[in-house]
Image 1: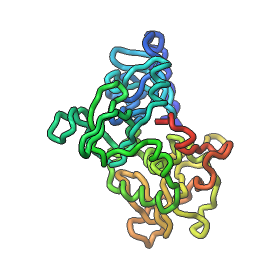
Image 2: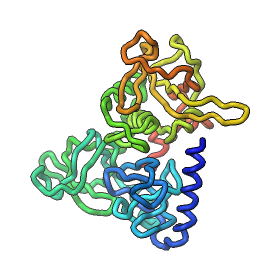
Image 3: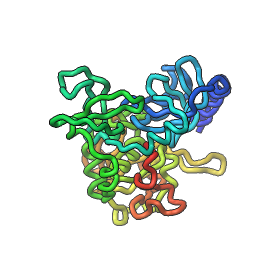
Image 4: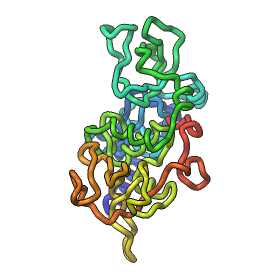
Length: 319
C-alpha cells in the first residue's frame, strides 16, 4: 500500500509540473510495436504498463520530448513523442473507423518494400494494429502505420481485424492453449506485450487474445466476474487466483499477484518467467504461496452489467 501511495504522489507531482505546457493535438495513437508508459517523464522512472501499436491515447501534458497521456486503462502516464502519432479529433475517429489488420503471429517485422531483404521499418508483435492498404504482391500486403507511413507485411503475419474479432472463442481450452504458447516469456514490471509480462499483463493478454478485455491490474481484476471458492473440486481452467495480504481493521487488502488456474491442481502465471507451478506440496515445482485472497471466474460473465468485463467486439477502440 505504501508503494501505491508513493507512486500516486509521484504521478501527481509530475502531472502538476508539466500538464499546463501542452497545447498540441489532444489525441495520439501508438506508432511502435509497444510503448512504455512511465510514472514520470524520465527513462529511469518506473514503467507502469505498455500499450500496443494502434492504441488510442489522450494527450494532456508535455515535458521536453515526453507526453503525458491517458490510455484506455491507465491515466496520467508518460511516453515519448516518437512512440506515437499525434491526431486531432477527426483523425482519431478516422483511425478507429479505418479497416485494419492485426498482427496474428508472436513476432515479426514490417518492411519498406515487399521483401524480407528490404529495409525494416519496425518490429511488429502479436496484437498490434495497422491500417489496411490497397496494394498487394505475392505473399505481401500493403499496410500503413498510425503515422501514415506506408510499409509491407507478410500476408501470413496478419489477419483482417474484423475477422479476428469475429473468430475469438473464449473457451477454457483456448485460454490454456494461449497461455501455454507464452511459456518462458520474461517477467517485467509493467510488461503487457508478447515480449515481456508482469502477472496481470499476462492474464490480460491471454484473455484479450481470446476476445475478452480484462482490467489492467490484479487489484482491479479481483473485482471482476464471479467469486469462486478456492476448492479444487469447484475451480475450472481459466479461473483467476489472486494472492496478497488480506484486509485488516487497520489496512485494506493488497493484491500482489494473479495466476490462471489450469486444472489438475496447477497454475500458469508470470513469476520471473511465464511458468507452470503445482498448488500441492507433492506436485512438481510447488508454488509455496498459500491462502489466496480469492478466485474469480471470468467466463460466463462477459459484457454483463457491473462485471468489469467486456468483449473485444464491444470495445474495438481499446487497441
